[in-house]
Amino acid sequence: MSTEPATAEVAKPKFFLPDAALVHHGHIDEDHRELIAILNGLLAQADQRDMLDGALFRDTLQRLVARFERHFREEEAAMAALDYPDLAAHRQVHSSVMARVVGTQRDTANAAEVGAAEVHNLFNLALDDLLRADLGFKTYLAAPQPEDRIAASAARR
Image 1 (cartoon, rainbow, N blue to C red):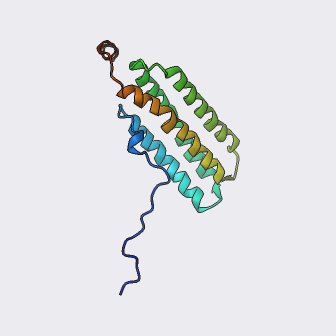
Image 2 (cartoon, one colour):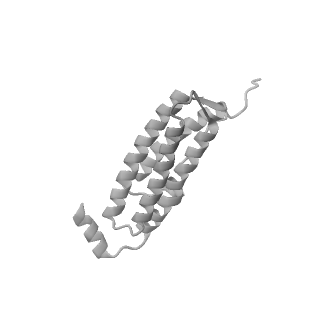
Image 3 (cartoon, rainbow, N blue to C red):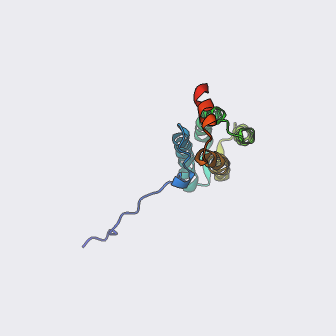
């Protein structure tokens, strides 16, 4: 008789993009999944030990910064093309997230080790954009659209 459990426990990512958070526009959802994958990699390391290798953290953080920058630029362009009325406020969220991520980058630039708390802080920053801020855009996209707005958006593309 086997002593193994009947079902194997499968490791799950710390964070995933729930269906309710999908924006369903352009590459936004795929961008969010890529950002989440980077964060999940850091979270997995943080859960294994209290301190992370500083060089590995910085390399991953640099990838995250570059991905955030590209995502924010493309997302804001998509919002502008659709005349999203809360674009200015959304840009402020992006600016705040980037300032805080770059601050983490600066603060850990020479650290031999980085505390797991830094990873959890990055995770919370990402939530500010991926879930909280982008849900307003999702609601805007789902609202009935006057034909003239659709035509104007199509003409700009």
